[in-house]
Length: 71
Image (cartoon, rainbow, N blue to C red; front, side, top):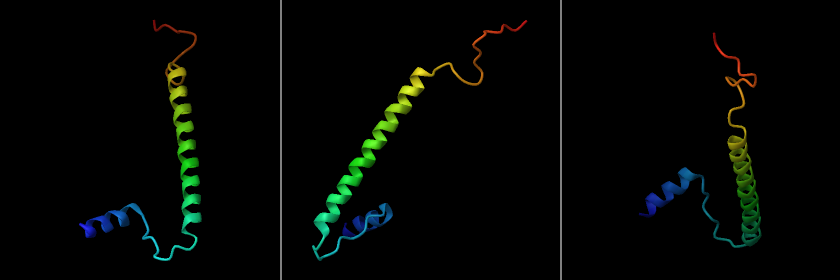
């Protein structure tokens, strides 16, 4: 089972944690902050895209504001 876990971590790009604990708490706090900022930005982008999708419905190529009727 440990072999499968290490393979999964390798595929996901998770690096092995070092045995020496020096600076690891700073590093993890920095990673947590970056991760939090990333997900916050991702949420904002998602909400913006969702709002744009729902409010801009019917606007764009193939839609005419003049309503030209075919003969």
